[in-house]
Structures are given as structure tokens and as C-alpha cells.
Image 1 (cartoon, rainbow, N blue to C red):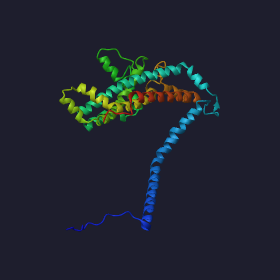
Image 2 (cartoon, rainbow, N blue to C red; image 1 turned 135 degrees about the vertical axis):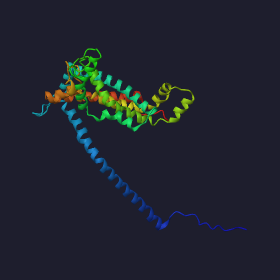
Image 3 (cartoon, helix red, strand yellow; image 1 turned 180 degrees about the vertical axis):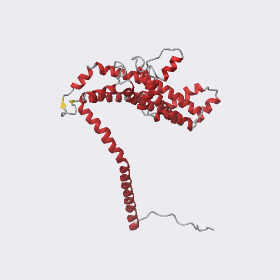
Image 4 (cartoon, rainbow, N blue to C red; image 1 turned 120 degrees about the vertical axis):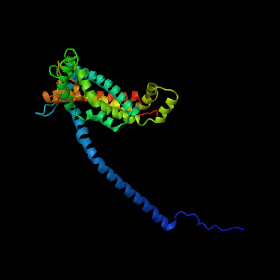
Length: 321
């Protein structure tokens, strides 16, 4: 005996006039919604795009144009072709400034990266207290100018409290910012003190993405903290570390504020970094064309370094599955 099923028959696709009218209406509604979302997205992006065009793209293009001219703000720009670049290649002060900048970058990046990585690992492995993170970040809340002035007072050769402590320990006072051998390392360490907390928190955020199971498995296998750092932490942190290095290198090549408020490029051009030399050429001697040429050269150098770093560190790849 066959029992008839009481369940309703399966629904059939719409056909005829009803189906022909329903589908186009749905598509038109979706199209209108898409256009509305696009307009809303454009509205939110517009302020940032306007700022990019006005404060980044246009000054960059304007600077590239001025690098081929002789311009002093008082007279119209005069096209001189490659004269500014020829002058730059033959300018010993430019090459000295580039060398001083490279020295500063090497010291700053080397010390800052090692210190920030150590702080980040300690925060992640020992304590994740928000209070400690706030203390670590506190120096970054100061401006470069304020940090430079404070350390200028602390490290003053005659009256600075830093040199007073050194004298109390029985050593001679050290001219940190007045000696050509001490000045660049001192400025680099001042900026390390200010930026290391921010860099450490960036690395700390990257450490949070590493699964804790890996550390637990390594502990079961008897691995020490030092071995886990080299075998787990460092390889898996590589993409974040690479991006942080790219950011800090670009920022270090643009050092200006600390030099301007402490040594003004002295003594004897020992701290005359490239940004300060460009500033002096533009706003001290009104050689805007030559200053623009040096700025373009710095842009090219930073672009090349960034591409090289990105490829060598494989910043776009991760070892996490």
C-alpha cells in the first residue's frame, strides 16, 4: 500500500511574466545599492585623497621640476637642466652629509632594533601588563624637539646632570654634543630612547600572532628560551620585523629636529645630516633648485633601499601556515 506524501512539492523556478519581471528588478536594486556604497566609500576616502594630492603628490612633482631650475623665491624659476645634479656630485659637503647620515642610520637602527626586539620579547614572555606597555611608550609621546632640548641640558659639558654624575664617579666630563667623535652617536642614542618603545610595541603586536602552542610544544621537547627565540620567535616574526625595519630606516634618513635643536650641524659639519644640509640650502641660502635636487637624490636612495630591504627580508611572505 502506497501512502501519499503530505510534503509540498519542490518549488519551481519562476517562469513567464512573473519571473521576467522579478529578476531584472532584483538586479537593478543591487546595482543601485552598489552605486550607493561606492559613493559613500568615495566620500570617506575624499579627505585623505585630497590631503595626499595637496601635501604629497603635488609637492613631490613640484620638487622634481624645481630640481632642474635655479630658483630663489624672488625671481621666476630658470631652467638649468642637470646643472644642480652636476653640482651635487661635485659637492664635498653633500657627500659628507650623506656619510654622516649613513653613520647615524647604522647606529640608530642597530641599537634600536636590538633593544626593541628585546623589550618586545620580554613583554610577551614575562608580562603583558598594559601599564608596562604605557611606560615603554611614554618617551614616544614627546616631540623630537622636546627630547633634544632635554638631553641638551642633561648632557651639557659644564652644567649637565649627566656630566655631573660622570664627574662624581671620578671620570672627566664628556663633550657629548660638542665633540665630533661623540656627537653623531649621542644624537642617535637620543632618538633611540624616544622611538624604541614605539618600535617595541609594533614588534610586540607581531609576537601576538605567533601561536602559543608552538612554545608549549618546544618546552615539552626541552627547548630553552634562547633556542625558542632563534627557532620560533625570530623566523615567525620576520615579516613584521622587515616592515618595521623599512619604516625605521626611512624615518632615520629623514632625521632633522634633534640635530636642529642640539648641534645645528656642528661641530665642523660632524652632524650635518643630509636633511639639515637641504634645509640650510633652501631656507638659509635660498637655493631652492639645488635643495630640490638633493631631495630628489634622497628620494631615489630611499626608494632603492626600501626595494632592496623588501626583497632581502621577504617581507611579503610569512612562515606561519
